[in-house]
Amino acid sequence: MNQFHNIDYSVSLLKRACNASVIGSFFILLFSVASAQTATINFDRDKILIGQQIRVELKLKDVNADTFAIKYWYFLPDTSNHIEVIKRDALDSVLDNGIITYIQNIYITSFDSGIWKLRYTPVVLYNRYSNKSITLNSEQYQVEVLPVNVTGMNDYNALRDIAEVPERDSIWKNLWGVLGAFIAFAIAYLVRKIRRKKIEIPPLTTKAILQQVLDRLEYINHNQPVNDLQVKQYYLRIDEVCRYYIQQLMNIDALQKTTDELILEMKARLGEERLSTEFYQLLRLCDVVKFAKYKPDSAQNIHSVTTAINFFKHTTF
Image (cartoon, rainbow, N blue to C red):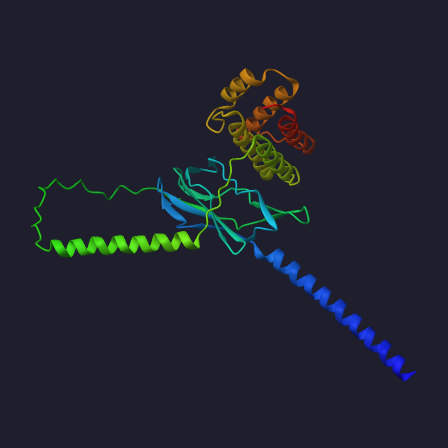
């Protein structure tokens, strides 16, 4: 009897140890998946004079290539909140042992003095195994733009003759310097080529672009405004997202056109269908909220984003 009792007790201990090991492994795996990815926005400076440029580094690192894919990347409108995007570098990526790091540099400026917040939509990843999306929220950033003070400037200095530089005799010294620089550049290039493996990112299809705009509009819809200030920001986001993706889908410079100019060009291509007409009315409503300080009620807020979703979902581009 004691032998059977010892066997049962040993089996019970073995089951508990196995269960504890499985649970511990699960939590370790869950923690590593949830905490691995990091999205950051880095400025080379946060204070400029009017018209000066700031380099903004958008970075997403430690992404497991087997588990996650980018559902959509950072979205910064070309013009928003007194900040203008003047250049966008291509999205770069580095693959190292199955872990991807994405980097994109964007150059911004402002021609209005003040302290302005950088408005953007964060990165969203898609988990291939759980079929769930993960939003990686970066911090809020602001830029201080200072006016140019010209009161203390003197007249320009007079032009002077070009000073002659005596010719040096050390030709061999210069030659060896050029040769050494070439060798150093070649070595650095080879090391970089070996360590880094570029990932070619194919252009998005129309279907993928439509899915992106629907995802962004659903994101806006799930963050309904609760006060007057948020109402204005709500319609600003709807207007910016709609214009940006109309530009992508119809090859129209929608971000730079007035609402009337944009509607006229869209009517020439899409006509006067019911969905198009409701969408044109939505664009005019966004202008009224932005410039005339009109405050729609909560029902109209929901109807506005629903109108935008139906337009992109059922219109053939």
